[in-house]
Length: 317
Image (tube, rainbow, N blue to C red; front, side, top):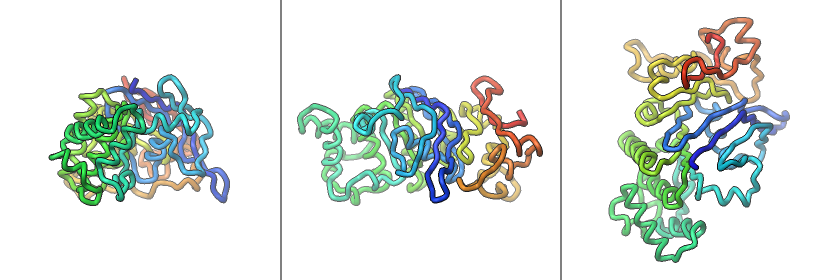
């Protein structure tokens, strides 16, 4: 079943100064046939949340508590050997830079074929045929010919399509796309997002997109989680989020979009806190225009449902 649920994940890093928390009670659900976007500024915890799902974490990462449920088992309790059977075959990753996943010394065809043979008990010729079929599916022209090319002979967009094809040919029911369009120009960005949308609908795939591009997810995501300094501060269906953002940080992000105001470009004052800053209360309070002194600066708000399927972590609600 293409379903993942993160429950109250608390994660941090061991540093020279001791343990420093980075994620605070993070909870979210990935549903079959839906694209779920996590948005927020750089360093807010988006990528580390996604990497927790496939247990690809830095060596100094420490999971204090929480669960990540997949196929009725807690991923966090699985061994590395058990995780290797899940990564790629069941949960696939599309990284920011596809060159980190493609070996420059081997052809595209060799790499996809090897991935298939590692997870499927089929002949090499069947693996080659499947590779060509799925390269064609992700709209790579002359797929059979492209099998003989090396990664450096492909454009950035084509490399991303190869990564997506590899995920599909292994029947991954869940795809984690970490800033999948960052290194691409605007036209190719739309093509990659449109391709992911097609895949979601055709294969009932769950897709988790990590991004800071609100314009892009506004067109394609089904659900949006806003993250700030290790906390999910708002979660809503896409249309509801853009129609009626509730958290002051969500409102500020949308207000800061180019073209959202006739006046000069809006900016959020201050900067996100580092994991070395110990902020009491709501972690957004030093930058918040709606901060209630004595409340927001003393207590941490919970993520509560304030209207159907719309959750917000803010004392103003």
